[in-house]
Length: 130
Image 1 (cartoon, rainbow, N blue to C red):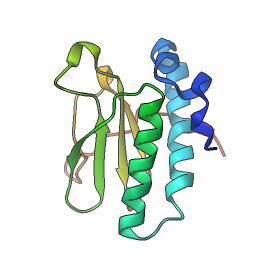
Image 2: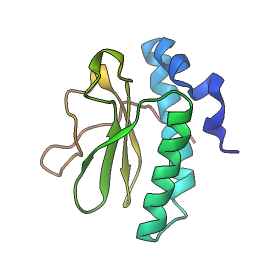
Image 3: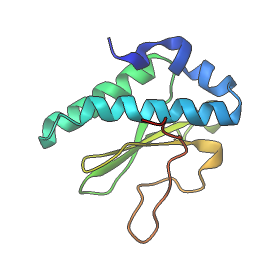
């Protein structure tokens, strides 16, 4: 079982109830765990199948994840259901075939799309020290 299946650590209700700084560290941990799962997958189709499996796992834990944006080359952003803003989740994840996963928290992220070289966005999560 993948470590993020721990509902007490990564479930939607748990993350939403956390204080801001604690949530930032927890989302940094989530980024590391996701990267550990996708890093060994270096073929295109299997990588995106892993992304789909990860989003399904997190959705099963209550997160509201829908594919929002795809840059056409390597990045895809998953996040809240914009058709139901009042009940939509806060977690957003940008998966990147070429490099690290980034997590965002909806109420703190003014940009809802894949970053570009002209307009990069920083992850909300703070990765734990190695």
